[in-house]
Image 1 (cartoon, rainbow, N blue to C red):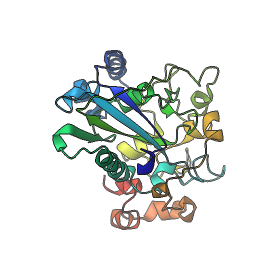
Image 2: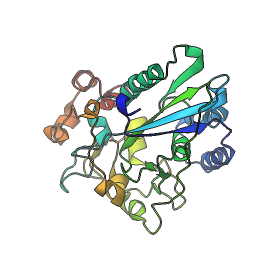
Image 3: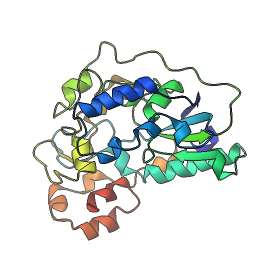
Length: 283
């Protein structure tokens, strides 16, 4: 995994994640994601990897840091902020390439013996990451690694092979006694039970829904939001990313509010091609 570029990893035995599924369904029933149709589909698959790949026995979960010079925040007067993950190349493409490298290293050539998963696949990756020993699910609902913090992206390989040994789950809770992210969230989207109301979440509104595209004066976020991460003490001590594939391609301070108010979809697609930010111009 390290040779493929992952910073942390673990292996989980395939089983039904019944408790996690129940919490997820309760979260949906409470109306926390009414506009995200993809979360309401394939729920059984999301919590049972054997439904994603016939004969699945194991899941290899990998995490890689993307923390960069903008991850811990912007100047107070900056009103054109971009979530730091979006400043690098599209992580979906990179993770898939890295996972293919891992599969090849394991000697797996039969496509029926492996399924490559990033967050576009219905898989409970955060639950699996905790079970793989990578970290705990924080108050901001993100996986937090004790070494890497929460500026990480996850990928998984579902395999039909049994493994010689499996990772121990991460049982500690590094969020005990801390509620900084709840207080920091500009819209109050984080609830005390570690759930996100996506109707309030700036990241969801600016990325998934494509709204508030020029809301410069309210919170300053053009695309995504890192507020619940910049205040996290675990991120303050986490190192910057070391995988060069996650080097930034965009300097957000190069673009002011006039630029964002006037850029056309065609210009945006050309300028930010290959990065997550291009999604902003495909709505």
